[in-house]
Length: 256
Image: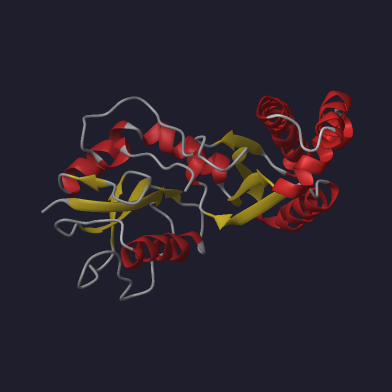
């Protein structure tokens, strides 16, 4: 039977509470595989697993339970190896890499920040900052709204100005919080967000990071900021040397 992998930790990591279960219906019992100084938190992999809310939460809960007792390198949901031997084989082959990541991420969590423009507020800002847009808007007003072409021209000018602000606004958010983070990882671009970034933060200084994010929200009222965390450090489990396709470590974690 194939093996579902939740995360990788030290072999000296405290045992999970008895009866811990993970993904599947019924939920599969969670167990630990060891290889040298490393261990993998796993269960049997259910057939036809899909990213349903129940199983996504089960994956997250196992990581939260394991992470409460020490550092765990989280795997993405759906990380499956052919069998237990494949998992322990990768732990052995990549022992140095995983040991380094465990040291680097010990005591740290991830926060993700997404930012988007508040439409009315950003339109007001680009109008106030751009005399050419203001002049075109005034000319249209005096002409009773302006011709179709004039309206199109104004719309294009505004859209261009808003687009031009995106990179600068994203950089402002990062500058506002990065001093409270050990590392920053840019996530994939997605529709509707001008920023999708994850920050590696010491547990002991997480309050200061959240205060900086709140200050950025107040200082940049034309932006909507969504802060999600604390999370396992998905975005900072860097891939190591390539391993055979289908092994557990082949699906390194990333930003959710």
